[in-house]
Image (cartoon, rainbow, N blue to C red; front, side, top):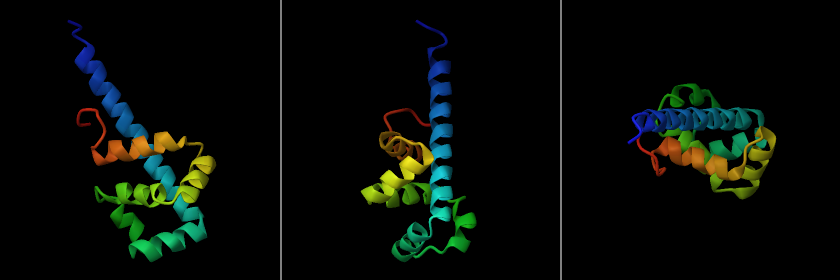
Length: 106
């Protein structure tokens, strides 16, 4: 039995979560710089840009924000192209942040 296996898995989980958080922040940055997306997001969610700072501390905010893009493929593809993110990595990041990935808790 490899005594470092559990340590390596835990480090992998932390790295995956850190990467997911980074993608979530890139998503918020993209939204903040795209007037059209920002208006659409506010209209659909009822969340105004001035509320982002407070809501960013809420556990589900980034998952909801990422769902907004995942539910509109043209927006998702634009975001991914502008931020240099593969769409499947974006979807995986959402799973990690939501705790629904196949990995252990982070």
